[in-house]
Image: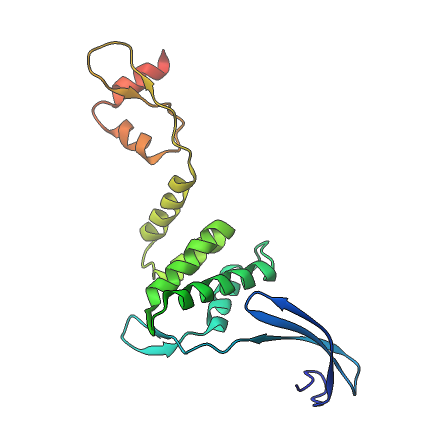
Length: 195
């Protein structure tokens, strides 16, 4: 192992620890005395990622990490968390047991984990990955994200009028309620709010 500081080839292992699907080794250079960390991973069979244009390239964990770092730039997300996402995606790709995996499956795996980790980073990644062409596409993705986060409001029955409709509380944030405001029955909801 070559020292990254002085390029000396003589190093010694100071500490070894098992990490998930890897061995983390702390090494010390015998010339300059500086320490550095290496990770040893099991070399698995090459998995090819099929791009949108039909090109094929080998799955590269570092490419996943590069995308994650860009999406999480200036966000309060630790490198350990990003490493965890990259490891999780790599593990899931291997678990599929296929020789070839479409790129969109890998992208969806990354987005699913980013959505839980940091919503701003998720939107950044999605805007590049899904190739948003206009502001409306971007807005649609943000609205979908907001709707997924909202807790469905409790429905309460309307006063007995024989219509069998439900009244929803109006808070101004739900797109379903915004749609209801534009519909012909929205006057019933507004009247109910004033009561």
